Image (tube, rainbow, N blue to C red; front, side, top):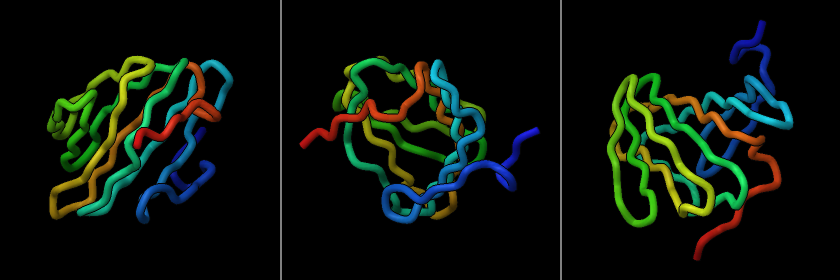
Length: 112
């Protein structure tokens, strides 16, 4: 059994949390928490696709210069080579799952 209590934890972006729930070569599932006013660096993945699924709160995700706002129990897929960036522009924490196939380690290119 895996949970936030026993999963590998890390800090990313500007004080955001991540918990690696599944960390296999063919996929990863990460539970992430973004405090209000935080964001990640705009980037893309050359090989993997991702699916973002909101558990609580609201996130904004920019995909190839188009913004989408996702609320609780809404999700969106990000295809390989699509520049993207996630923001929490709300006044509450946002928690969501990021499901990557294959694993997201070592496949990230920062976009200037």
